Amino acid sequence: MNWDDWILDHEVLIRLSFFFGIFALVALWEVVSPRRELTVSKAVRWANNLGLVFLNSIVLRLLFPAAAVGVAATAAQQGWGLLNLYYLPFPVAVILAVVVMDFVIWLQHVMFHAIPVLWRIHRVHHADLDYDVTTGARFHTIEIILSMLIKFATIVLLGPAVVAVVIFEVMLNATAMFNHGNVKLPTGLDRVLRWFLVTPDMHRVHHSVEDDEANSNFGFSLSWWDRLFGTYRDQPRKGHEGMSIGIRGYRDARQVDRLPGMLALPFVGRVTGYAINRREWSDGDEK
Image 1 (cartoon, helix red, strand yellow):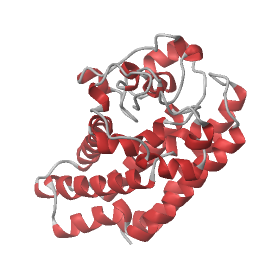
Image 2 (cartoon, one colour):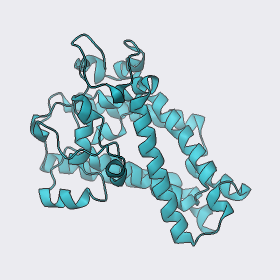
Image 3 (cartoon, helix red, strand yellow):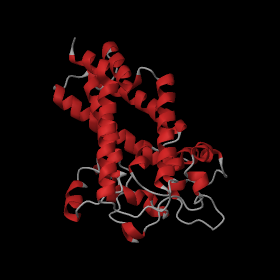
Image 4 (cartoon, one colour):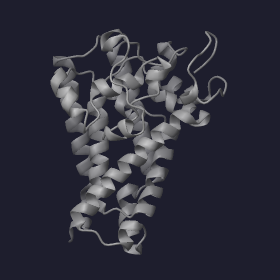
């Protein structure tokens, strides 16, 4: 059995091991050294956020049983994608593939803020009234499906190795849980880390109710893209303890922190202007 076959056979175990391991570490860290005081029931939020994760996992397995690694294996067999057409040393090809896929995820995130119909779906992630490790996995089922389709298209066009796809998937899940953690990092360590990785303080700004703050720091894993494209913001105006998390106009926990409300949220309210381009909202307007 070659390396790719072994990865394909153990892909689910690899991803779940990292998911539960990182989740447990960040959850414990949140208890030992929380960054902010939570404002709503943690038990209720966790039950509903993780319930959405469970639902999404079932839907993905039913719709896409081969998952991203299966598409990568098929692309390699068929010779699809740039990296299957042009030779690069294997380590270089793996690193390049991970970096390119991370950029695609960054660009996808920007588009989910810029296009009204996509923002309606993505606001399920932003409507969480608190910010902790479970927020990092809280996405509407439609967004999860669209994200998987974008990932498949990227793999077919790029042709990454199976191992590169697994590294990317593990890194994305791990960093999403880390940078959504309600955890406190020493200021000096945060300053150094955010030159390479998205830290909790860096990404928390993105979950502010303030419009210009929410439309910054789109990165999940690598922090370079926001600096390169001018969407980087260092700190929230009111500080991390004073900032409000969520979406203006959606502050009812029964709507935004309960599973039925989360699933219905994309279909609530009017389609308004491009979220990423708007800077002012009237009291009666929806974001």
